Length: 148
Image (cartoon, rainbow, N blue to C red; front, side, top):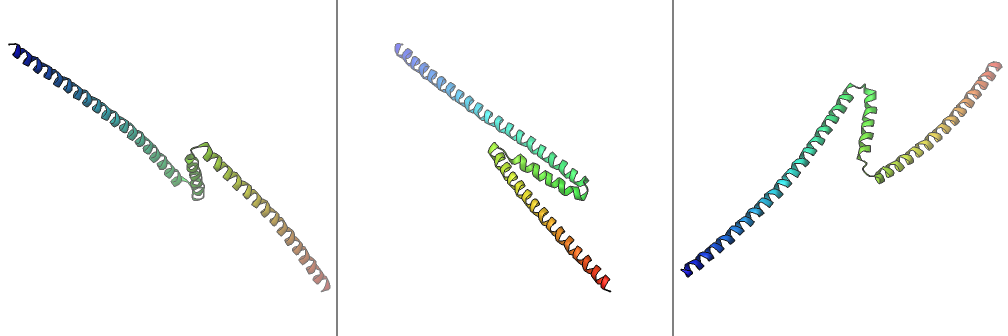
C-alpha cells in the first residue's frame, strides 16, 4: 500500500508540475496577446491620425483649388505665389531652419534694394541725358528756324 501511495504522490506531483507549466504557458500567451493588442492599437491610432491629417490636407487643397478657380487671371498668379510662400514657411520646422531662411531672405532683400537703387540712378541719368538731348535738339531747331 505504501508503494501505491508513493506512486500516487509522484503522479500528483507530476500533475501539479504540468498544471504549473500550463499556467505559465497561459500567462505567456496572455502577455503575448496583450503585447500584440497594444501594438495593434498603437498602429491603429497612428493610422487614424495619418488619415485625419490627409483628410485635412485634401480639404485644404480643395479649398485652394476652389479659391484659384474663382479668382481673376491676374490675381490667380499672386494667389499661387502666396500659396507657395505659405507652403515653404510650413516646411520650416526648427528655429535653425527659420534663422537660415530669414538670413537668406534678408540677403535677397538687400540685393534687390541695391538693384533698385542702381536702377533708379540709371533711370535718373537716362532722363537727364534725354532732357539734354531734347534741349539740344530744340536749340538746333530754333537756330535752323531762325536761319531760314
